[in-house]
Length: 113
Image 1: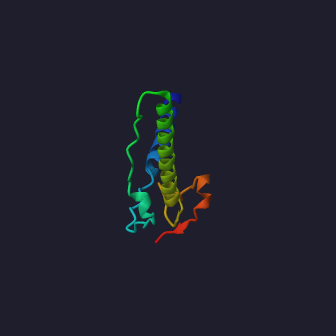
Image 2: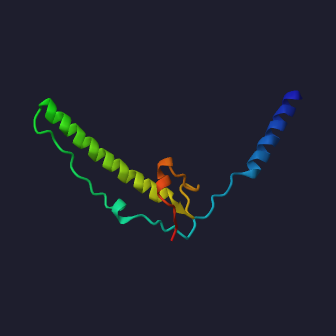
Image 3: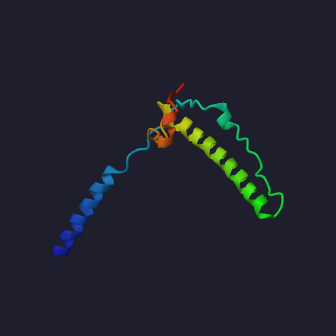
């Protein structure tokens, strides 16, 4: 008798849990945000990395410095793109308002068009 009562209680709890179901997925929005991103950030132009002239330590060091400068320029372009995207107002990213990195403080946010 006691086992049957536990079984019936468990069955009742499961039935009420199934009755609620999952939240329905909201319908996709027909309006798409128009992001305003500078064209120079979208060109994707990159330069080939320089190659060392020879295997001498001085040439390798100069090459390392040149490559590091190019990577720093690329990092700046990426940060500009991230700031342009997260600086939009009235848009969401993955359903949430965008969060800007601290480095974007020098870029003013632009309203969505």
